[in-house]
Amino acid sequence: MGPESECAMNINEDYRTGPDGLLTFNGDIVHTEPKLFYLNGCRDLFLTLPPEEETANRLLYALYEKNAREEDISIFNGYDINYNLKVVLPGLVGDEYIKSIPHFHPVDNTTGETFTEIHEIIQGEGIILLQKNEETRDLVNKVSAVEFKPGDQLFIRSGNGHTTINTGREPVIIGSLIKRSSETNFEPFMERRGCIYYLIRTEDGRSEFVFNPHYPKSVGLDILPAPALDNPHRTEGSIYQAFVQDPERFSVLWK
Image 1 (cartoon, rainbow, N blue to C red):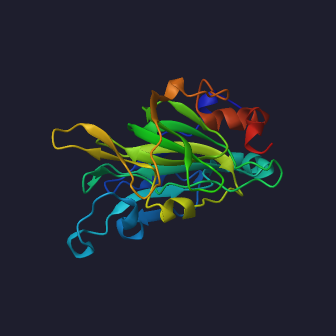
Image 2 (image 1 turned 90 degrees about the vertical axis):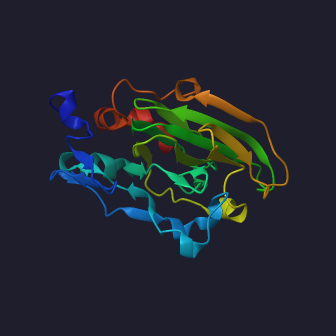
Image 3 (image 1 turned 60 degrees about the horizontal axis):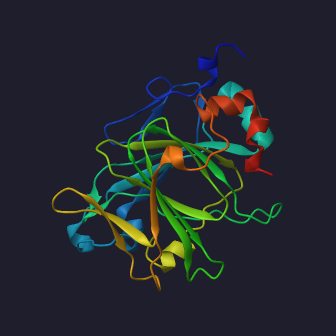
């Protein structure tokens, strides 16, 4: 297969962020057109927001799916796996940090559990908020705020809804491996106007979690760094490179 670097996908070599925060790719990288998420499409998910006519409908984040080098496409197709790239822009909406729309993944008919996902942090700093609800959706069993930085990897276990929050000054870029048929389910979070906690920046520049009153009751919040989150599928190099070299080590994504 050649040197390891040839089967990786590297920022600033294979793709880079432009002034608008969107990605541009080199010619040998195959990818779909990005799904773009703007403020007006998810205004109700933020804690405080000026009236629509006073707030620009700005881009919050972008999702690029099915990214691969041309020579690797058959491997990803053979296992029905996507390597996706998500870009979450920096800044605030009102007092709240910009975030992606929280979502669950659907139940896999084979396992009876929701699809799992593996993340790698390529650029930026922030928090992935993990939320596990009861089947009725009315109560939350567990919620964790996982602090991340470049180089961290996270295993998103079955049943965990999640959102990515950018608390830094540059775009957050996350690569992920996920089953191709795993659609996102926004509905449970739309009903409650977001996750059970919002993350805001206070007047003195601190970050503070605020309870979402659209949930019937609060639950304790665990705050931990990404390396402390259990991840039996951690790799030494990039997850893209590791998947191309040995797809079967990621069988948890489809079994």
